[in-house]
Length: 478
Image 1 (cartoon, rainbow, N blue to C red):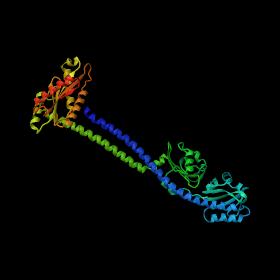
Image 2: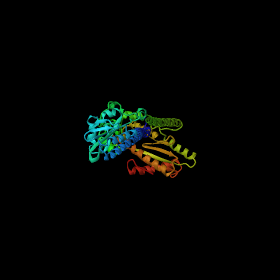
Image 3: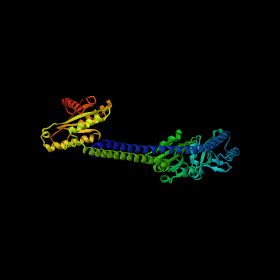
Image 4: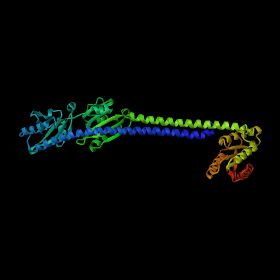
């Protein structure tokens, strides 16, 4: 591949690599955006579900609190009938489906008036441990969870400051089958209290398929701590987070009690839920890469075709013009004749003529023999032909002097551009052989500023060349 091809091909190749990196980064960011949108969507649906739960719990808690306040003026034994009526009305109004009251000795009765002993109830320890000093909250045990129920419980202060307990069970709905049965794919969807006890559950897949106890906070993925879950519940904040080496978590707290919903989603599940949006991104990336590759191929083909056309044009012109047998360039006379033809056949001609002198820095280049010198001349002739336009006039003036005439160079910006490129060309002139070093100088003459004939322009360029040689290596002068 010619060096002129590499000048544009390498930047395009680098651009293609950079574009590929950008597209890979864009795909990763797109997936993060899609995953975050899906987390938000799940959180909003869960939030609506939790809002309904909180409304049901709030109504039940209000009913229990009202009943508790009424009992301040009653005795657990003397006012049993009135208290049973209060409990029965709570059930009849649909706030709860079971109620019971106990005194501080553990004796009590339910909304149907049946006698109960607290110590024989499955919720006895939870009730006494959490509400001996009063307050209202939610508790649950394995038996109630199996019936999809939780308890709203609290402490009661009867007349004469005698303490007791009130407890009521309320049905707890699981997440709808439509929500996590078909709309979303998750690893775990549960409602738990602050200690990780299940209040209700939809169930789990894979890792959490057997979840039935209160150890959920001890079985979290390594990137999610129980403190994070508890903080979300206690501060009543929604958390949407990515868990390294696992996937994602959505935490939505209850507003009425300390607890809330915990949704865990593996990375593979998230990819499955976002596959449609990600497929669109993949298609866009693929089309962009294909278009970029096709662009590079087309540019490469156009460059090759252009070189082929230039080569054919030069071959055709070579049949009509005198060529130097060594360099393959126009002889001095043919070079002058081409400039004269251009000036005479062009209306308001303009151009830029420069003569390049290639100077040896070691004796073995000067005395290395005709074959070695001819090889260097031929090599430099090929370099000139590959570096300029097919419409430019390139010739060999003899000795170490070469000449190039650039047609239609008139404006200052074009002159500056060509001068800069010529300066770079002079710096690039070097040979990798052993025992010698080559450098070049150049003299420049502008048409029509320095004349409207080949001889006048050539003489002006030679004078400028002498000045450039006096300036030092790889210098040019006007």
